[in-house]
Amino acid sequence: MFEKTFKALSAPVRRDILNLLKKGRMSAGDIAAQFDMTQATVSYHLSILKSADLVREEKDKNYIYYEINATVFEEMLLYFQSFLGGNDDVEE
Image (cartoon, rainbow, N blue to C red; front, side, top):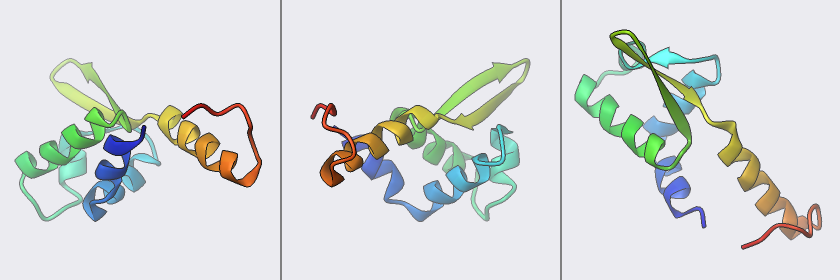
């Protein structure tokens, strides 16, 4: 159910990228400027986050902006709450 999500969250740098995006949408260049790695490496991590649906991208002229997709986090919370008796309606 959440295989891609957990794989995406397993790398500390991807969690760091998500923490940056909590402040609001950012361009790939702005994200890359926060790390000591190549633009290509940052793009790779963004593509993993995007394939797990944890981030969305929006194209604006010559730039691509990334933002958090909170829906996936909400689904995960509901799933975990089902183990605590918080929600009986969650499907597997």
